[in-house]
Every structure is written in C-alpha cells, then in structure tokens.
Amino acid sequence: MSTPLLSVRGAQRALAGNPVLRGADLDLTSGRVTALLGPSGSGKSTLLRAIAGLERLDAGEIRSGDALWSARGQHLAPELRRVGVVFQDFALFPHLTAAENVAFGLRGIPKPERRERAITQLERAELAHRADAYPHELSGGEQQRVALARALVFRPDIVLLDEPFSGLDRRLRAQLRTETVAALRAAGLAALLVTHDAEEAMEAADDIALMADGVIVQTGTPEEVYLKPASLLAARLLGDVQ
Ligand code: ADP
Ligand code: MG
Image (cartoon, rainbow, N blue to C red; front, top):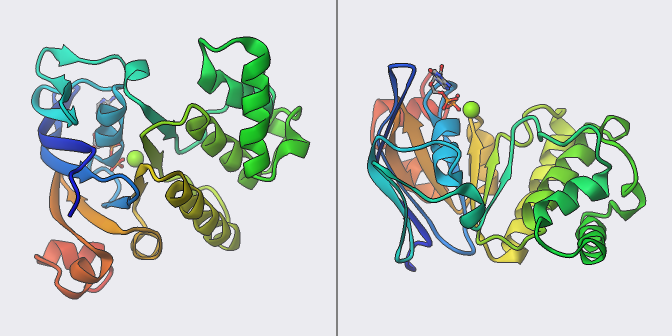
C-alpha cells in the first residue's frame, strides 16, 4: 500500500455539545477513490468538513505529508489545503454563470486566464455549450458536473464529494457516478466519496471506510468489507443483514 496523502487520526469534534466525531481514523491515497459509507447522522459530513478545513478539531489530528493541517488549537485555512469540495446540494452561486462558478475556484489568478481555464474544465465535462447559463437554467446532472468542474479546476490534490448524486434520479445517478469516478481517476488525485448507499460504495470505490457513531469501524477494499464484515454493524451497513 502506498503512503497516504492524507491521514486523519483520532479526530474528535463536538457540535452544540453533541460528540459528532469520536476518534475517527482515515487515510486517503493518491489515485484512489475511498468511499465513506455510513448511515445518516453518523458524522460523515462533519469529517469531510474537518478535512476541508471548514470545521475545527477538539482532539486528534489531520496531516497531509509533513504538514499538520488540524489539531487542537491548530487550524490551517481551507484555501491553503489543496482540497476541492463538491457539496451535497452542489452549492453553486445562483447569481453566477456556470463558467463564473467554475472560475471562482481560481481566485488569485488573472481574470482572462481564469475564464479560459474554466471553459477548458467545462469542455472536459462536455458542458462548454452551457458556460453562460445560470444554475437555475441547468438540469440537476449539469449542476453536478459544474460543481465537480469547480472542485477540479485549481488542480487539487484531494477532492471530497458529499453525497454528490443523492438528489438525482437512479439512471442519471449511475451515469454520473461512472463519469465522475473516471474523471477522478484520470486526475490521479485522492478522492473521498461520502455516501449512505452501499451499492454506490461497492461500485465506485477502490477502498471503503465504514462509519458509525463518529468513528470508522472498518476499512478495506469493497471485496474485503463485503465478504468479511468485521461486525454486525458493518454487515448492516452493507445491506447484508437488515
Ligand atoms: P452525516 O453526514 O453522516 O449524516 P453529520 O456529520 O451531518 O452526519 O452529522 C452527525 C451528527 O451531528 C448528527 O446527529 C447531526 O445532527 C449533528 N450535527 C451536525 N452538524 C451540527 C451542528 N452544526 N450543530 C449541532 N449538531 C450538528
Ligand atoms: Mg451528511
């Protein structure tokens, strides 16, 4: 197994007095898609937000290579972590066009170059013809592609996707899943795909991390976790036992 690009160790976080992360451990490796699979309320989005730098840690740490990103009293700003995020509702800016939404991922770069790179990224998603459309004029699938383009345009090392297909119908979901995973693999980055759908995790991921009650209860390849669930809880998450 190659060295992980990102390591989370013993991550703890309470929100409004409620312990949401209770000592979570997770590794992400370049060129691999890791599914974070767990029931609603298990802490998946909070862990994703902590990795992105949108949430602080009360204890434990998040490291990328030699850099300490998060620990108690230590917090690297989100824009200094080379992490792209696709949120569950896509979080596109309604008053910006598709191209402007994607270009937003390139703050700090001269404007003409920004537009050019945004268009190139949209071309990769076969969406260049929608560059000047506003989010409300785009279909759900198109919005998802724009959100992914915005997350990839600054060439991050890590991409985090929070249930990116959950609002879409079944057929579109399967198609976008295939497309998205191909794009992530082609970019060679470390990807975390948050989902509560066992089938999605089995189909899309190289590795699966099972989460319950704020901790990772098992990690392994889809075959490993499916054939040898380490607990009744793991078996339940995989839909083997109801
Ligand atoms: P998941 O993404 O797995 O559904 P979340 O990370 O969103 O789980 O939330 C885990 C738990 O933390 C839930 O019980 C949720 O109600 C609680 N929680 C999430 N965000 C907050 C918050 N800002 N304040 C208080 N509780 C929160
Ligand atoms: Mg969530």
